[in-house]
Length: 477
Ligand SMILES: C[S@@+](CC[C@H](N)C(=O)[O-])C[C@H]1O[C@@H](n2cnc3c(N)ncnc32)[C@H](O)[C@@H]1O
Image (cartoon, helix red, strand yellow):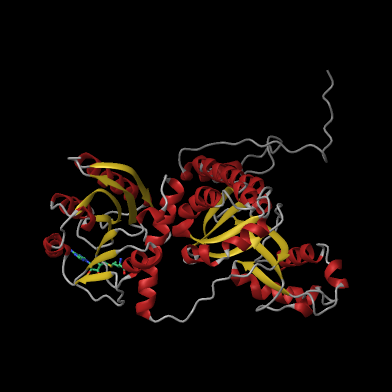
């Protein structure tokens, strides 16, 4: 058989790979190769570095995980129309609030259908320092954004949710840190049915920008100036009082080292009518602020309990309450004014900064106050039906001890509604704190007769705090 001629231009020259035990032997062989006269075997001999195969495997795995993460985000964004910028420590609480509390609390409202359609599609933690993004789909994002901006939600959400972005459910592959990415974002916005704004009289329409991360705002503003030559947006920017909001959000950015450029950044955009926050923060002095912070903790916990249990707070109206660790007075204020308790025994060695006819301040520790309160009990009607404690104690079980001590001393009615703050002082991490709270509840259930005990991690709780609420019954009845 005739040898097949090889087209020298097309054929790749073959290589042979040789492995030597040591670098020294390899160098000796290379040197020796230069003395061989007949070069028909090979043309060149070169040294090569062996590739660390474990490294290659690792980088393949990380490329794959980047790809998976990216594809997951494309999928999440394809359904997302509202993004919430949230303090990272509050993400789990917010997800629960949106998917459990909101749908239940709007059951009888005209927007119940919108609230029932809320679905948390995903979240991206610590996108910037301490801030995470929560991706939501809802049948009407404007209605939800407007509701969340109302005072009722702002009171509990203001520490957790920093901003809302209404976006169109599609993500675009661009990186806002690059000029090119900023140009795509602005082109996208300018391409969105802008004619309606163009035609309307110029003073009617104004825009403000909601940009995430905020560090990209400056760059995007100058890109608007450059690209929006007709001045549709640039001439109508009004950061204070605009009737439209332009949202541009970097929803995903690959954080690892060897980025695969095709799948390293995603962004979303949208234009919506303005939804403004109803809550205008009034100037408060420190004392008032301390009262109101504590006040909202009790308010939030009772509202949560109403939603999740067969309970209405009006049941407690006219009852006698005991507030342990009551200073400066937020919980006592809520019990005396909102619940309309007949009398609140408010116990704290500290100073109460409010005075009301139905609040009696016992300026001492609870262990000293219990016998004195007992002296004033002459019949069943004088007994305590609401027992709340926000006292800072050395151990979490201490709250249970005081509740059961009050019961043993005979100052509690046969059925008591209780709210206790458990402050975890050891360990860290959500699961750890949840576990500790579970143990305290199990301990209470072993020692006493209780019903409908719920444990909450409220927005008003610190990360190591849990609030437990339930009913306690007299063992002898
Ligand atoms: C976080 S503050 C309570 C805030 C309060 N719930 C409010 O609404 O303003 C905790 C209070 O527990 C009180 N405290 C700690 N140990 C106590 C005890 N054994 N008896 C009564 N109060 C106690 C402290 O004096 C402190 O004022």
